[in-house]
Image (cartoon, rainbow, N blue to C red):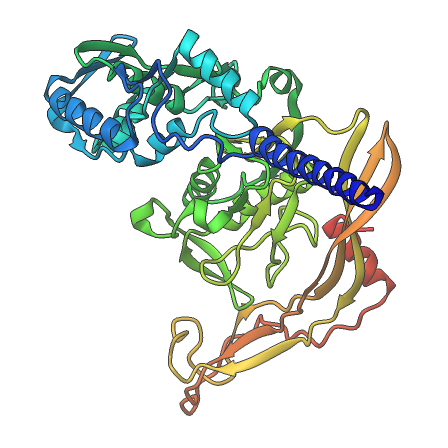
Length: 503
């Protein structure tokens, strides 16, 4: 009897424990679903008090809301009348300019899932808030209508403008050479805000005006400080008082191309490109030029004096020279290693503005002197730049060469053998170096070699007649003296240094 009671008691206890475990398991499962699960709500309809573009979609499924909205937007399309305004300009956009897209699915998915994630407490909180305050959604007009993007960009292009920084105007022939143009702010349309305004206007289509939202962009720089710092950086002159009028004209014409030029930081300039082809059509005249070590007549003679004058002003401004060439014969108007020969096709003067600020070029030519002035932000206080030409050695000439006038080119000068005409004197050559000399308050602080040139010597040329004398004929005394090959000595070098202003 006692054993039966014990078994019964034990069975009852086991049943109680089994029921307790089952209760805890079910409670835990329900709690997890209740607190953590997203499947607790399987609702696929919009919350109450949900509005999309003014349409109440409360309790609707996505498909139902889509049908209602598509019908509304289709009916409203013909009623659209937008006027975009900016300042005193207006632009009209009508419904017939829109195409009908109505791709609402992505936005409807987003709206119907709003507040559906998280635990039941957070979901309930969102649902109650929407019921109380309402959920109002405005669809982007691009989801509904299309086809006006090109027109909008055309309108925007009429409104927007780039900011304009202040600039310096340079008039070299005016008493006030430098003046400042005022800066202008730029305008840019806030495209996102404009699209939002259009979307809102299409809530209830009617004749609606929209002020185009514009943002002002200020210029990045102001040049007032730079204007105050502009000064004469360098000046250089060459003399051409003994030149012919046509040669002077060529020098003036070439330099006039640079008068008033502004060279921006980093900008590269080619002399040949600026001056153009040396042709009569371009205003250049016949004058002496150097070809193959000889002076001959050619169109544009004297242009090399213009390039040389400019070159010497540039190097005194410490500007970067990209290309420079020397003549075959020394130029009489500058020391050795400071000439700048130019010739179309193979020799140019090129330079670059290696400063952080613009430079300005002024040229002045009268009947005696050609001058180039370079303006810009000044050199360091007390700093000046000069030049120095150094003679390395004299290159001796080989004396005279005697040629026979077999073609009769000089028969007006010489006719018979034994008759002589000097066509050209021999000229010694030079090897030279050019330096820039930097001075601070008059004291030399550094020197920099910028040139190492050779001006090759030239032999003299004596022309002899080609015809034989007739019997009994006598020739007049020959005044042409043969010059032997040169021998270089210290006196030769002293004379060369004095002639070319060399050290």
